[in-house]
Figure 1: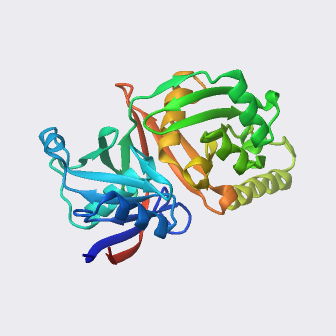
Figure 2 (figure 1 turned 180 degrees about the vertical axis):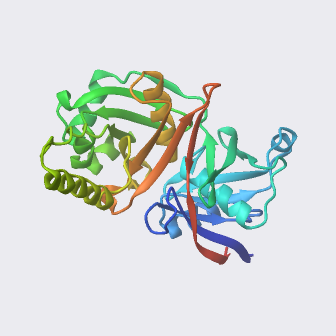
Length: 318
């Protein structure tokens, strides 16, 4: 029998609603079978919908604060990043109180995931501890087929790894951020290949400022004003541009992807391609402007954080 259940829709990896990755959260998923969960996830038509439950006996014994089940329109996921941050935010907004202040423990298919709250200006920002990563080199045949589906030439791919932290992604480091933004994938071909693909690229180095008017006061003033105006007009700088293509699970392009960014961070920091702290941008090609805050701590743990904005709060009947 259906009944009203507390519900939120939140926007993840943004402080301003409408620029991140939306998530539907049913805060009371008890008594719903798998068919009902999947049907509601298809109905929301979002990349992910989550259902919160009390922790299992085993999870509670290990300190879990709540349990979450994560569904795409096409199936259930053992772990995903933006649903982890969004579910934690919704749980806290609904009055959830973690056993340890400032720290949350989420139980999901991949096991227990730790989260922390950190000050971020006038608000708190959530970050999750990236699950352990398994990675390996893709086969040349698979890589060639994926490159063809993305319209990429071999020379545009600097590095490739199969990344598995629950979800499995084929991660491609491309020549630069502009190459990432120019990709026009054949989603049907990617679906047929059965592979989710994440592409990333570093922004091109900015040219050195023009040395104008060293002996001319007006020229110096003009140059400074021009640089200030350009800085004011430009979006917040990022260190990595990311896109995620997931046609095999019913999502052609995901706006902002926590699990992919987590595995990219573990790979690219370990290989010395990125510093221990950086900001990734994702969603430009979909009209979004997501920001993913990544940090590897002194113990080697990678944390993936982002802001969350509540958009809708009420009830859903299911």
